[in-house]
Length: 201
Image 1 (cartoon, one colour):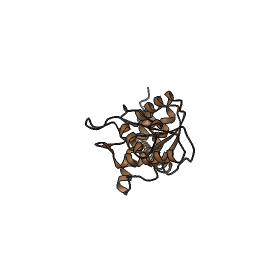
Image 2 (tube, rainbow, N blue to C red):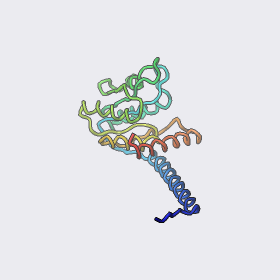
Image 3 (spheres, rainbow, N blue to C red):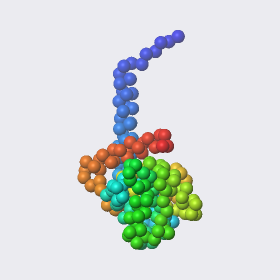
Image 4 (tube, rainbow, N blue to C red):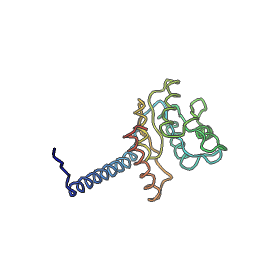
């Protein structure tokens, strides 16, 4: 029986090749996430699904407010007839994100009858899954997903993975303005995007 031993230099070359391939995959994913977030679909849909974000007491955080304002603009210009707010309770002494979003939108002259909410989700996937259940109960089938630009590719991928007719509608402005904050957000999104591609979670 032959006892063949792989030369050390080939092991080194294989390791370098694997690391290089991983780095290329990361860089390619980060680039596609960045570019995807800069495109907007000017289409009409049944509803805008606003992905949850932090609230400060009973007010939306700056990040959440950007998302809500964008959904309100879509509603007022006729791109959607319904807004679905998502997000549960982050801190025990705060209201659910979706409720804060709804209250803010009503104060901006969005009709309460045109707002739907789900208040149990804590993650992007849960946001979308729960929103779909709410939408199905109201015969809504086509959606604009509203979130920050760098969040869009993963969110839309998840939505379509759930069988949704989903389209990207990133906020035109973002609270992640500095180079450092954008790179931190992009790094985090790239990691979660690759995790979703592999594990579907």
